[in-house]
Length: 313
Image 1: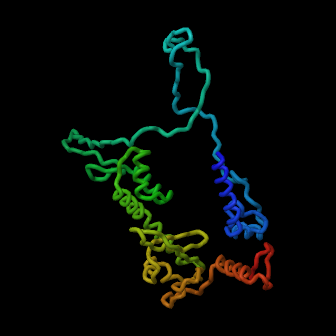
Image 2 (image 1 turned 90 degrees about the vertical axis):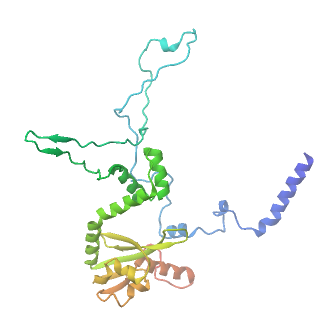
């Protein structure tokens, strides 16, 4: 015990000697002498109130209510009574307590065989029933609801393809391949092609439109592409490609665009091949970021301030 106390004391002395040379731990960031993180400092400069934990005022809630159940499960006492009799033979005295619980059905994807019957009219002509909507002309296929689920998980919920396969197997009990999921995405893209074409046409006809691009991991490990976007107040269009001029032409917006291009000042937006554009405007978010950077880089300089206290043009 004595040796243990001596070892603890030695550790404490070593920690005390090294404390002057080490940086403060994360839990000490709010001690006197420590500046606030940049995000919190900017929020304070704008006069924003600190958000409370939990649900924010005005945010939609999801309260649970007692409702008419879809199914009632009866449970009866089991085992033996103190007198020794089996409770399975006891008389039912009614419901003593009730509990409601929201739950998903434990049912795997069902396999449906669609038999198209042949009918023979009194005149002698024969007729075969038409295939139901959503059933392709193939002996084996996967239904439209399962296809829609795959598209929803990958596109709207941003679930990776392999995880999408696992989730469908766990929740729906259906085994699908990665190729099936990719085929669902291609089919969904084909269905939306006319809508995408219309949106891009409306953006091309706008007087002002914003353009941006950001990187995205795509393909094998280490490969990346760019997600390009074109925006107005009413419409948005996205496409995946490289950052070259040719890929920007293939989107079909900039070659015929005759309005003002609002962008992050990427050089390709100023290229001479865009002969119809009326002008270029730097994104105001980038301009404000430049002003804020100037104010932080040269704190002694006098900068015109707006009502919020931040530097402004």
